Image (tube, rainbow over all chains, first blue to last red; front, side, top):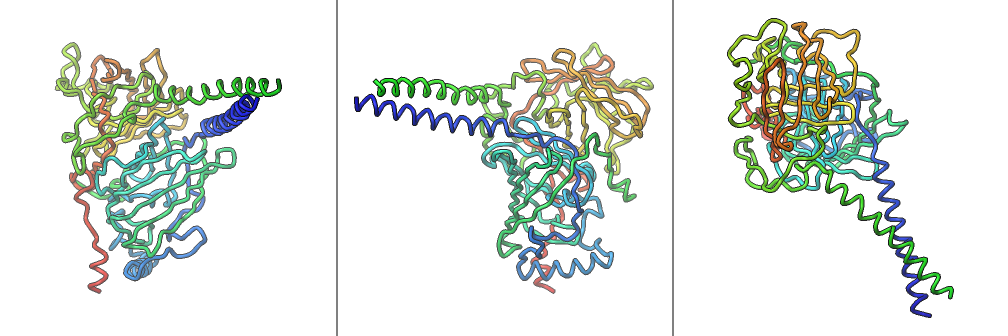
Length: 234
Length: 246
């Protein structure tokens, strides 16, 4: 009798556990939303701030340089440090801060982010580890994974010629960026929480948070930087 | 008696739940795009695609409507039309597009101004989404978007890539592009062949083949670096030394 009772209890417990796990798994599976569409940031970013509105924790050297650049930027003299004015790639995550629309195309195991600015792109491969490091490159090497209904992107391999904002915030080749994408408002509002980790530039890791609105029916307009800026690049 | 009932209840509840756990996992394994089933390993750092080798044992996906993956021009075809098609050197007739996967000649790819291209060729990365299929050629970051079952906008302004919509005719994606600067209407037919190891694009009677390359991830090829490849020769701003010197 005791054995039967124990067996029954074990069975019920296993059923409950399995049911719970299964339901959670089913919920995660069902809850994977579509991030596909055209998006635009609510407020374009020129000087990047932490999620609570503070200046990021730059180390002494980086802070000194950034202060100089911000002064130049505000004086309308960004050419001395901003290569995008020569149509060099803007890099990530800055391109998502500038205010132009971008789209997300969501494949089963690959996410595409396509920016308006000079047709820049980023591919995020949904897998667990960075198996291939090609770079450093302007847009880095990205992997991603689902965390419930959120997508988490992990980027490394950025070259240090790009900036984190239009005012010239620097970073090094050691930059590690983690972005957490989540939806609300019926899927019409995208929140991207970005964590920056770069020991050569910052005294500690820090997080920024931005929201984007969906632009239903919009298409990404064709942008050719050298034509827009009337540059002759051969 | 109640213990027996409890045991039976536990067993009854347990078995289907366990079965439900295993089902989606197996299904996911069967349907997952194959290029992500195995890790890509080997000496690939700082290498162009020519140095990378395909991981052994990988097979193309079975979904004929999902072109997601990387492709390069199939060896032996050179991306050129088959013998039955017009020779690649022949000038395209007016208001037609080339069928060899090269540019349309609307604009030269000079001054880092991209040009239109046809289909999937060397090296092109495809992501198939719910409503959009995007094709990205590494060279010059040339991006085309095909809106699946979409419609053309009424107020379309002429552009280099125009506006493309696609619908499936069986397992063939039929793509119509309008709004090109030339004013032409381009129709392409794209389908997987050889079990997905190749993708064939036909347009205007010509055809081109591209190899599915599961070993390739997207690599930046930035024209604005004046021909420098893969972003490796970017101009480094050694701001830390610069700052120290100040």
